[in-house]
Length: 370
Ligand SMILES: Nc1ncnc2c1ncn2[C@@H]1O[C@H](COP(=O)(O)OP(=O)(O)O)[C@@H](O)[C@H]1O
Ligand SMILES: [Mg+2]
Image 1: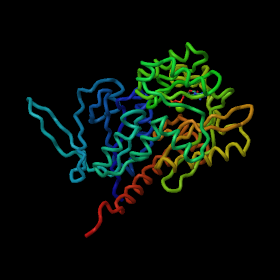
Image 2: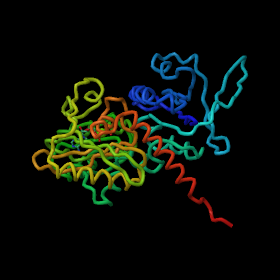
Image 3: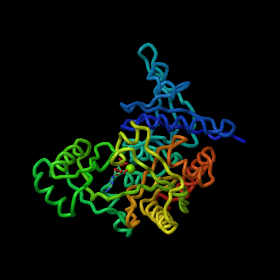
Image 4: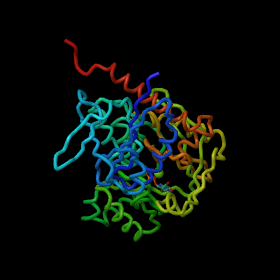
């Protein structure tokens, strides 16, 4: 049997660069060398694509000198990887390999938000995960909420304001936020992840600080009502047209909320798998997860994150992460593990789904035939 040629992409320009390297390490270990021929492509914080003997090691140690520039033209007639070598001030470009599947293991902007997916679509290659629309809507907390509202999927009450509104009329923005009810509120940049730029605002002064903080990271800022006594429950979704869900898991943040520090610095946030919630609550969560997944046209995988109000068990969908943390101890694969699908089989399945989606695309007519 011919081996499938898989290009694993990692690193990237977002604040989740290092998380991506950790996820990629686990994926690379899981790709069975009997089945796959793997090319590693690292994307630097500056956005350079690099490849070489052991790209991940080079990225982890910061020693890039042995690596060469990797190029993927956005042109379907040249949809292979090229590598450029610079010698004596001349640059030569060689074809590196034809690639059957691209596997982006990138989190956040320029990886999970539809931009990379746009390049992969232009090149007309198979790739793991959601397409352009699913990725970008999954990333944008403002538009995502509107799509959920339109589909009657319960979400927390929220408003969206622009950086310009905050700069010119902070009092007006605060008035608008306070119309939603009592503190606390959460102020968030619309397009980011890992809780960067997010503040829990317990008072009016917190709110003005939180709005300015969020406005550093995005022109569009979402402000939500805080859910009191919140339990954070997550479920993994896998599939294209007929997505399936795993068991649910609960996150126990080490701080007042699941902040950047709580996610990556403390290392003491707990996971409870499966979550200890009544069956009717987890069944509802799984149903909402699938409906949301279909509503934004996800493919491959997503992790759906919910808030459950502990006194009432009222459920709110918080977000869909289309390229969730993917280390072997991350929630997404662990939930599948607990549902009977081990990590290497999960990786195989994602590759199958990527090929199936490409086959669907190849069967779609792009223009009227004469
Ligand atoms: N409306 C809310 N009510 C209660 N807690 C919230 C709310 N919004 C966010 N949080 C807390 O902030 C964390 C990060 O928010 P989230 O929207 O998931 O951003 P990110 O995309 O960066 O993960 C959540 O995991 C939760 O702990
Ligand atoms: Mg989150």
